[in-house]
Image (cartoon, rainbow, N blue to C red; front, side, top):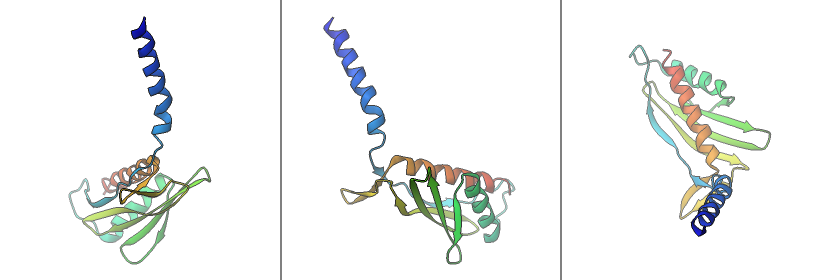
Amino acid sequence: MKSKFFAGLIFALVFAAGPASARWPMPIVNHPDVPVVTTSGNAPSAARVKEAILAGAAAKNWTVAQQADGNLQATLKVRGKHTVIVLITYTPVKYSLAYQDSIDMNYGQRNGEPVIHPFYNNWVAELKESIRGELLKI
């Protein structure tokens, strides 16, 4: 009887803590030097890589602003509450996605390491995969 009670208690605690703990800030995951891979196997021009980045970002509802040559600033606004900004650098052979700024995403430092709401990492990973998908169309 005690074992059923403790098993139920443990299940309840894990279940109740799950959603709350999933939102604790996590280390920021940047994506440096992601190789540009195309279906054709040919290296595209920097302009074509930029087009793929713009298309991939638009497919995931990110807005993109031109920065210096070879740099883009991608912004995602979610439910009018959360905003994340990523710096994208690119060349004909690689691209990188790096945290630049955020609003209402629990950004901070833990043990000297930048941390943020875990949804940030998910959204940036989805952006990276969308860009990859667009590059594969080349």
